[in-house]
Image 1 (tube, helix red, strand yellow):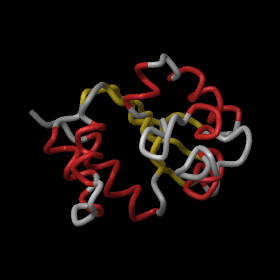
Image 2 (cartoon, helix red, strand yellow):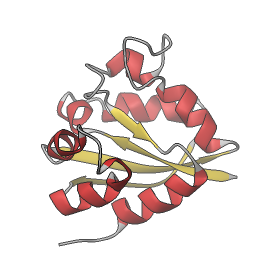
Image 3 (cartoon, helix red, strand yellow):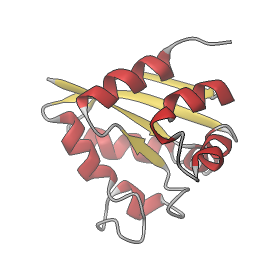
Length: 135
């Protein structure tokens, strides 16, 4: 079994889509291993997205991710990382395949409702950052 991380982002949380999104991943054979809702601090958002720190959108991403509550979910199944990326769809909801989470619920390229780890290494890092207790 493999694990991966999904974040349900502030835009989806504010639109009451947590249950809908979790239902989709459960129907896809994922088992929820851990789940946590929190309003991410700026420091945690900067750490979580540190891979993008030199990109022009970094500060906007940090501001967006700290604008409301997010839900972090550790999911498990065979080929979890790859399969979740298929289920969430393209970053741009306009380009995402039909019936993927981002196609169904994403508003824009930036407000696309969910994040999914893109590798086993990303999962290991991102899950430690999100589930670590910070003040």
